[in-house]
Image (cartoon, one colour):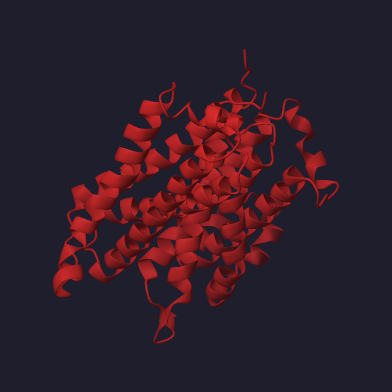
Length: 319
């Protein structure tokens, strides 16, 4: 009987790390694109910068407790080993998290920044010298964070693919699948944030997010298909592993809840919302309930993808 070494904490870490990577990528893109010297999509840029640090920080915290002797996690940073995916990933997460918090600080309003430093106890009053306006650094931080966000998105899949004894994971397509899933869930989180906000919506920014998410979902779908085809044409152990989602215990979760409700249904909803733009070059139709529902489905599908792959992958093995 196969043992499950990586449980729900790893699933949460993979999802939260990818979510932050996707949010930051979209926020950085919205910051980098300029109009009259200002971000072309300011609300997306700001919301993303405010949201990006927290999922990856929480995910890394959960990962520490999955290490067993959690208080020894600092040893991961005493050395750097190029041949170790765990070492590369640890440093990648550390740098990426630092960039996301720097971007968060750069987007803080002046009053919020002053309040933050006002809460410091007297013995830490010397830190008030760091109460600086970093708004001029927003675009450089976005450019710096681009490759790291992509790296974190890919790494969440590389971590699984590096385990060669598990045929369910043993393909580079897993890393690509997780990357596009991370970008899609990040975009969906921003759609959800804009949809539940009571302020009037800028339809230009909604159209930007819909366009991105439609592209990311489509790319993810066309990575899942080659993954299945590649597996069916691969060695017998990989074919047997795929039976876990082709008639096995994870079939319903994969096809109905991930593929159906987590990919195709939100894709249909977003295409429906974009229909006026696609057919008549009119303003995007935006129903907040539909948008929030589609975003929630994408987020749920992204979580299910990682759950299925983490658990099914550990059951599979080369014989």
